[in-house]
Structures are given as structure tokens and as C-alpha cells.
Amino acid sequence: MTATTFKSGCLEIPLTGNLLFAGGEMAAVANPEGVPLIITDVKIYVDTPSTGAANIAVGLAANATTSDNDMIDALAINGAITGLAYHGMTALAAKGAAQVWGTTQYLTATGSASTVGFTGRLFVKFIRTA
Image (cartoon, rainbow, N blue to C red; front, top):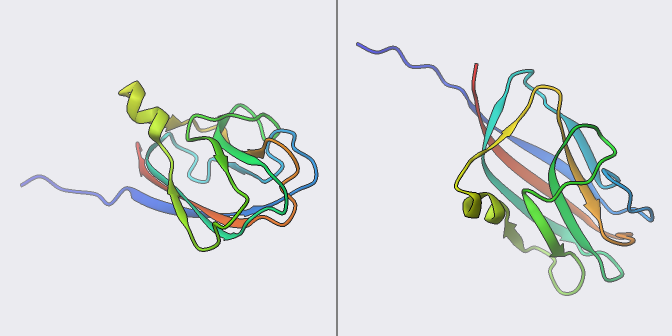
């Protein structure tokens, strides 16, 4: 009989709006497991929209201050969106390959402009490779 091992998980990452919009200003999280993680799903939930027009980009980067958009690309986070959830991973599906969160990489969330007022949560599902 083949032995099985539970190797999956889900992170809930708080997202907070910021006046600045450099890389990782809304969130920056190091790989929490210390092994490569295959990202299987990404969702963003909006608790409160930003007060001004802004988009969010979420992805994996070499450090906590670099922006990336491989998971979520230019999603508008203002307007009448309180309580709504959005899919990420569209770009990944188009690539045909799963994204792997390397052991030294950071997941970063960055606004395109001031995201003051925004609060939300990012849910990231993954499979451990080791």
C-alpha cells in the first residue's frame, strides 16, 4: 500500500492600504515553510476599498521591496467592492505552468497609487514539495 502525506496549506495574509506605492507596501511575506511551494490558488477578499483610484499587483519577488504581478495583475481596489472576492492566478493559467514560491522568495502586494483606506485579505493555497 502506498503511504500518503498531508502536504498542503493555506495562508491568510492581511492587506493594508498605504500612501506609498513602492514594492511590497501593502504586504510582503517570506516563504513560511522553508521549502518550495506550488501555488494552487489565490483569492483576494475586500473588507474596505481604497479611498482613491488604485490597482493592486500581487506576485513573487526576490525581496520584500520588489513588485510583481504574476498572481494578480492590476485589479482595481476602489469603488463599491466591499465584501467582494476576486480570483488570482489568471496569468498563471495562461502560462500553463504552476507558480513555485522559492525558499528565499517573498510574496509581495503593491498598489499602483495611494491605497489609503484599503483593507483586505489574500488567501494563498499551496502544496509543499518537501
